Amino acid sequence: MNGKIVNQKAWFFVIPVLLLVSFNAIVPLMTVINYSVQETFGDNVFFWSGLTWFQEILRSERFHAALTRQAIFTGAILAIEVPLGVAIALAMPRKGIWVSVCLVLMALPLLIPWNVVGAMWNIFALPNIGLLGKGLNALGFDYNYTRQVGDAWFTLILMDVWHWTSLVVLLAYAGLVSIPDAYYQAARIDGASRWAVFRHIQLPKMRRVLTIAILLRFMDSFNIYTEPVVLTGGGPGNATTLLSIDLVKIALGQFDLGPAAAMSLIYFLIILALSWIFYAVMTRNEEQ
Amino acid sequence: MSDPVLFSPGWWTEPLGTWMAWTRATIAFFLFIAAAIASMGVWEYFRPGGDPRIGILGLETTRGDRLFISLLGSAWIYLAWLWAFGAPIWWPTAIAIVWAAFVFRTV
Image (cartoon, rainbow over all chains, first blue to last red):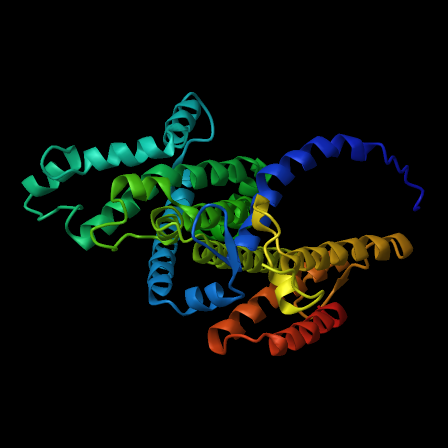
């Protein structure tokens, strides 16, 4: 076959990973699919319900509302984190001692466990004792994220930007440092403006890493659970109940395994489809 | 509960024990997916190389990519149908087959 050496023994080395993945991903996913067409009243007793749950979830206003909130959240954080991350990466030094300092500072938020981030911001933003909350109120803003919808959203988005912009920065920076100096010299000789350098040298060279950054941030923010649940618990009311929070409420709060399974499959298909479309568009541009 | 008649709707949908909550209908579903993936392997064995080409989407796709696009698209066809019209799902099944044929020929 094409003169290549085919060594089928390599497959044996894949078996452990395959076993691990089947137990932590494939078996649970299959179980969820089995649950999604049945009804249970606990005690592991199941009754067939066909595709009723899918129909119910697809038509439920509660699901539409959670999906809308999720789309707004993901759209907002992508619109902020990607340009901000690129801007910070452009401003970071390329040589000298400050490189390490900047990189370590940037990596710090990424090292903090998600529930700790939620707890930190919960206390930081409290209007009576938190630095942010008390500070804003002292400046004359009527700020209370536990009661006002706008404030809750503001805090939620600010928390996510604080936590995750670094990821975009680090990836964009990795793309930037890989550009050889010759490109910049050529641009200088041609008298290219700062914008032209960015548009025709830096941005194309960052395309791959930015694709990964946007995909990661899209998937993570669409799946986000821990931070908002610790910060706002989905409140005030249902104002910050994102898809995953709603899913957990249905699955573990109400113990409606059937509808929760159907909802998680729809959720999964949304993420899969959007990620694929995004990936297809980005790789297509690359090929052209 | 008496045993349902072989291949009757009740036979397909009766619960088969508690672990993973299997039914014969969902077993059939997974067997279909597994058979689709396995058929790609058989196809690859007889015609190696994956038949890469650039289709109407302007993307380079192999047979495996086309299977993935067919299955993902079919899932969305079913969801859209359930949202708009509900069960039964014979029509979306027909649309999904046409869709898969379209993807394998042109994408």
